[in-house]
Image 1 (cartoon, rainbow over the protein chains, first blue to last red):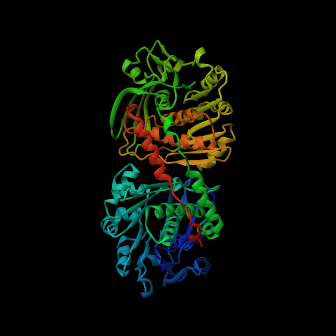
Image 2: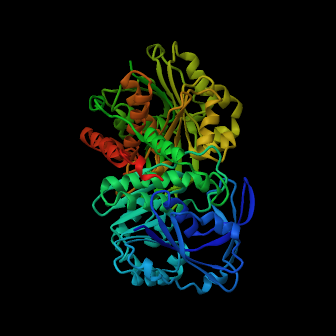
Length: 310
Length: 310
C-alpha cells in the first residue's frame, strides 16, 4: 500500500534569471509524485487534456508511479506561466489557464479507496474534502494549501483542517491564515485549528515542524551551487517528507524529524534545474550524500560548555 | 585577557508593534558588551556626551565590563530613532543625531593595546583600521558592517576585510556587497575578500557560518513567545558568539559551531524586551536551558534510513 496524491498536473512556462522554458511538465501532483516515489509507490489522481504531450507523460511513467487515476478529458491541459524576481524569492503569475482543471472532480477508483496515506495537494478545499470522503480509512492525511484558498474559501479550508493530520503551509500563508506575525506563533495557532502537526516551508531558509506533542524541529535548506528554478520546491518537499514518513511506517518524533530532512533534501534537486528535470536526475547515492550533508551542517556539541557561562 | 569592543553607544527611541521607549541605552557596543561579558571580561571603547544619563551608565557597570576606555566628551550623546514594521522584519530610521559620535576617533589606552581579541562593531571602516593599528597583536578580529558603509566607504571596507579573521554581516548586506543573489554563494564570495570565516545573520531565521576550511554550519533562532524589539539582536549575537569563542580559547570547527549556538541563544534574550532590558535579565540557568533547546530543535538521526531510498 502506497500513497495517493490528488493535485494538479499542467504545462508550465517559467522565466527565472537563469532562463526560460515553455510548456514543461508541472503541477503539484507531478513534483510530489516524482519525489515520493523514491521512498514508496505513489498513485496519482489528476486530470489532463487531450493535448497533454506524450513527452510529459513519459516523465511520470515508472513502476512505482501508478497512473491509473490520471484522467484524460476532452479539452486542454492546465497551463501556468510565471516569472521570478532577480533573487527568486518572489514570483509573478503572468497567465493561468485552468482548462480541464476547472471542472476537475477527483474520483478515486475502487483500487485506491483502501489507501490510508493521502496527500491533498494544493487544490480547492471543497475537492480536498470530497477526496477524503471517498477513502475508507484515511489514516495519514497530509494537506497543502495556498493564499488563493485562504482568501476565497476560508470556511471550507477551516473544515478540511479539522480532518487533516499534518498541515503543510508556507511562511507567508501561515501568517495570513492566522494573523500572527511571528511565524512560530502562527504555527501553534494552526495546531488549534485541527492538525496534530504543522510544517512551515521557508524557502531558502528550509522548514520547521511544530507538533501538538511539543516537538519543534528546524531543518535548513541544502545549499545549492546554482538555483535555476524554485517552481515545485514546496511540493517536492512534501513528496520527500511524506514518502519517507510513510515508508518508515510510524509517526513518531524520530520519524518526523528524519522525514523533514528528506523533504529538504529532495527539494534541493528540484531547484537545480527547470521543472522536474533536476528531480528526475536525482541519484540514490546523491540523495543519501545530501542527507548526510544536512547532518554535517547542523550538528554541534555543547559538551562541557556549561562552564563557559558566567 | 578579555575582549576589546569598539563601537557606538547611544540613546535609542524605538517604536515596535509592542510599544515605544524613549532614549534608552543602545548602540552596538552596549549590546555586544552585555552579551560577551557572560563569557569573558570585556573592555568597551566608545564615546558619549556629557548628557549620558547615569541610569544608562549603571546598566553597563559590572566587574566583567571595563569602562576605562569610555570617553565622555563635551556635547550630546548619539541618538537614534526607529520604527519597526508590523512583522518587525523591516525598520525605518526616523532620526539619527550623531552628536559626539561624529568626531569619534577611538583611542586605545596603553592597557588595552596588548589585547588580542577585538570586535570592530559597525563603525566607519576607516576607524576600524585605526583601531587595528593601535593593537600590538590583534589575533582574533571579528568585524561587523552595514549597508551605509558598503555604499559610502566601499574601498576602506574592502581594505579592512583583508585584516579581519571573522566577518559578521546580515543577509541583505552580504548580497549587496557581493552582488550575489543566493546568500550562501555571497558568503563564499566574501571569503575571497579576506576573512577566514563569514557569519551571515538571518534575523528570525538564525544564522549560518561558512569558513574557508569548508565548514558550513546553520543554526536556527531560538523561538521566542513574544518578540518585543529586535534592535541590537545582531550585536548581541556577535557578543554571544565572540564571548563563547574567545572563552573556549581555540578556533576550531567544534568551537565555531558551539559559538554560533551561543550567539543565537544570547540574541533571543535581547528581542524579548526593549533595548538591553531582556539581555540584562538573562540568567545563567536560562542561557544553558536555551542552548539545550537549540540541540533539541536541530537534532535528528538518519540511522538506518539508507534503506528507505529507492
